[in-house]
Image 1 (cartoon, rainbow, N blue to C red):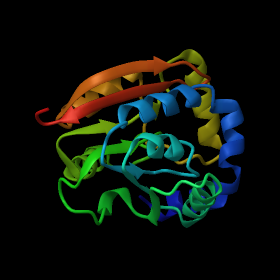
Image 2 (cartoon, rainbow, N blue to C red):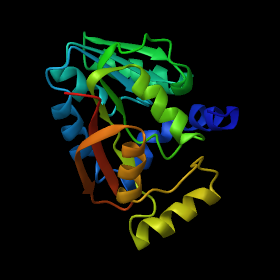
Image 3 (cartoon, rainbow, N blue to C red):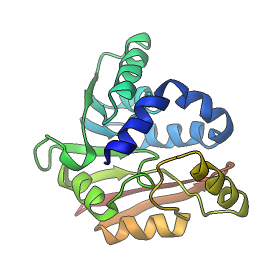
Image 4 (cartoon, helix red, strand yellow):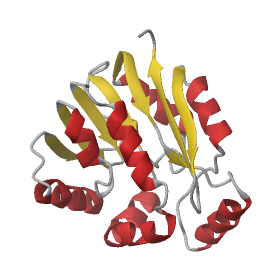
Length: 208
C-alpha cells in the first residue's frame, strides 16, 4: 500500500461507518455470508478489517480470528468494537497485506472484505493471501464492484474526485476472473445489490 493510501484511511477512519449510510445496503448480507463461510474454521485471518464491520460475525463461528488493518486509526477503531462487543477470540493487529508476518499455510480461512479494489498490485495481493492459507483453505473476498451498474459507474467517478484511493473498478465477472487466475477454485459467487454492488466471491485454494 502507498503512504498516500494509508494517510487517507488514517484520516477517514472516524467517518468510515458514516459513509456506509450511502454505500452500506449490501453490507449486512455480506457480513452474514462471510460469517457462514468461516463457521467451524479453527483459525481465521481477516485482512483490511477496517473498523470491524465483519469481525464479530467471523468470531461467532471460528475458533480464533486475527483481525488486521494497515491503518493505525482503523486498528484503534477495530479494537474498540471488539472490546465493546466483548469478543474474546479476536486479536487485533496492524499489518500490511503485502507483508504479512504469518507462516505459510497457517490459516484455515482468510477474509479480505472490500479491499481488492484498493490494492495497487492485485496479483501480489492475492498471492500474499494465498500464501498464508492452508491447502484446501477458504478465501473470502467480497468486494465493491464499481463498474457493475450504470449508477455505480457514476458514483465511483464522483468518489474519485474526492481523493478516494481506488486502484481498479471491478464488475462481479472481472472480480471472479481475477480470483480464479490466482489459483482459487471459486465455490460461491453472487452480486449483492446496492448503490455500488458488492461481488461476493469465495473459494478454495488447492484440494479440499
